[in-house]
Image 1 (spheres, rainbow, N blue to C red):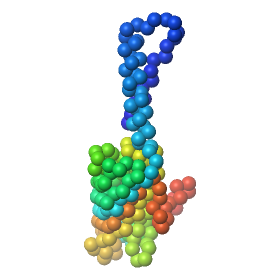
Image 2: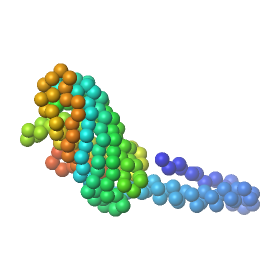
Image 3: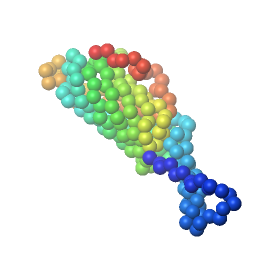
Length: 204
């Protein structure tokens, strides 16, 4: 994160400055605008939308009944369009989360880190709700960018889960992994998808 540099205050305009103080003031005058520009860039207005794919591993595996689980995920972001930063065309991300969920319902929360194609990164907090829509398990995600590119902006995503072994949901071991489509937007909510109300506590 950018470090805020505070220029030294002068105790009297009529008093001569020492050479060291003059140099310090000059350096601060140069660096403060640069730091302010970096902070302004992180909160620039606009939206960034990416369509991609995601793979998630569950421990323990998901069953037809809710239980506590730890999730690790990796995502490939492609076909990105950004009015906030036109240099973004794609990226990769990882996330870790915990929650109480099944193959068809539940919720979880965690942290995601995105590394964009331009070398910048975004750290994102989030909470997700799993539901069934048109026979598919869909995860609605909502959160906030807490650090890096787009810091302070809201973000959302929709993850449509596919399974190579759907019958695994009915076994004691459960479903170990899932993959699917990911639509991610920074700067606005994904239209047509419900998201959790973070003002209310979860009910299990």
